[in-house]
Amino acid sequence: MCIFCKIVNKEIPSNIILENEEFLAFHDINPKAPIHILVIPKVHVDSFNEVDPQMMKNMTAFMHDVTKELKIQENGYRVITNVGEDGGQEVRHLHFHIVGGAKLAWSHLSDANPKSMI
Ligand code: AMP
Image (tube, rainbow, N blue to C red):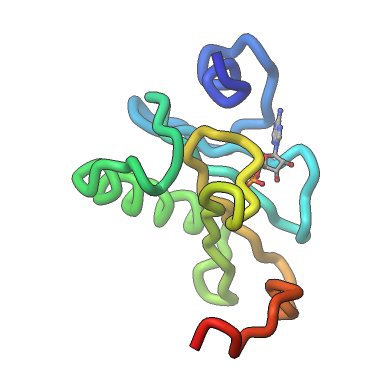
């Protein structure tokens, strides 16, 4: 069972901020910004590649509730999902990072020449 499934089953503790029947939002254990929340579906989905668009509809509504709960809608935030090896996905259970609480940098994303793909 993957680590996030264990968090869903409460076999591993997490600092939960919002939960419903389908989704869970909890604090990232290694925050990269003053606010760093992970939002996951309770059913196991490997990554964004496999997500059911119908589930995304409900997940989007849940993420809106999370940003309201965090009171970051006005100041702004960033939503990120890493996919696979190139995307830097470490945990193979779909998750969206919601980061905010400060002005976020938009620095280099890769050491490869950005123009090399054009
Ligand atoms: P990613 O690199 O997109 O797969 O992100 C995985 C994220 O999960 C990282 O930001 C980790 O800090 C976070 N993480 C790993 N284990 C835990 C855990 N037990 N509780 C909370 N966050 C975790």
